[in-house]
Image 1 (cartoon, rainbow, N blue to C red):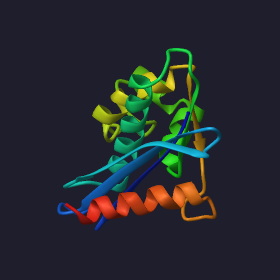
Image 2: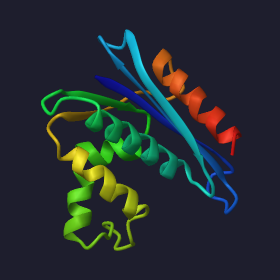
Image 3: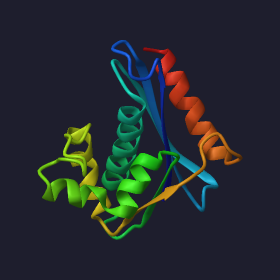
Image 4: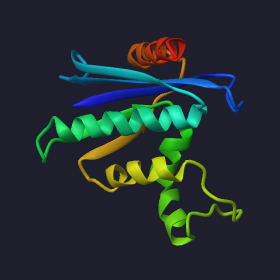
Length: 151
């Protein structure tokens, strides 16, 4: 199965920022829609919304598939995909959840929920260009924006 995830915020970084997250799950190379979910958060940052979407998609996939089934998670978040591909999280853990500049890692609680999926060989994470030509990324972006508006 594959999942597309996205997060959206208004007034990102302010104490009153409203955020939305969404994911869709498909099979048959993206031809058959299986499940969708979305929600809102306040206060939120864009990174919190992106992380929440990916965590919820991974959790849903884990709970609704066989142990050996492979999953691809598509995200337009360079923050998440770079962390996965470049193994930033391993360095953070070794350094007591500090970045290379010695500052605390933001959203540690969310990263701790996501890392088991990074380490699970049944999950792969792929970067997709945000607001590009990928119809599924555009759909999940629209869902996240709509979820944000409901908060």
